[in-house]
Image (cartoon, rainbow, N blue to C red; front, side):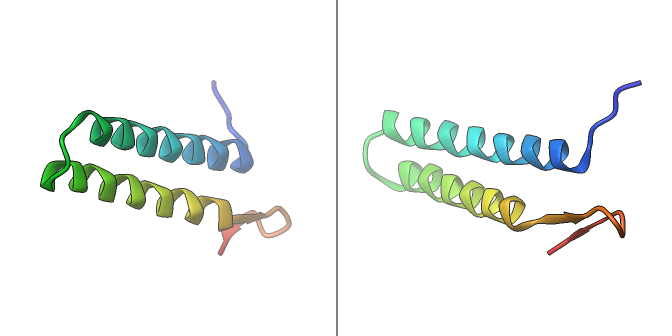
Length: 68
């Protein structure tokens, strides 16, 4: 069986969002300026906001739950 702590899970989520943002920014950089590049940059910004949410998310070990 594979077990993750809340902190490990949160760190994995942060890493996933960072990877997504990097992917979208790299994709945008390969394109000529325009609507499609703008879309990829916007998607990267959304991933950044998701990452920020996970950074702000804490875990209350006594209560055994996530807190915002």
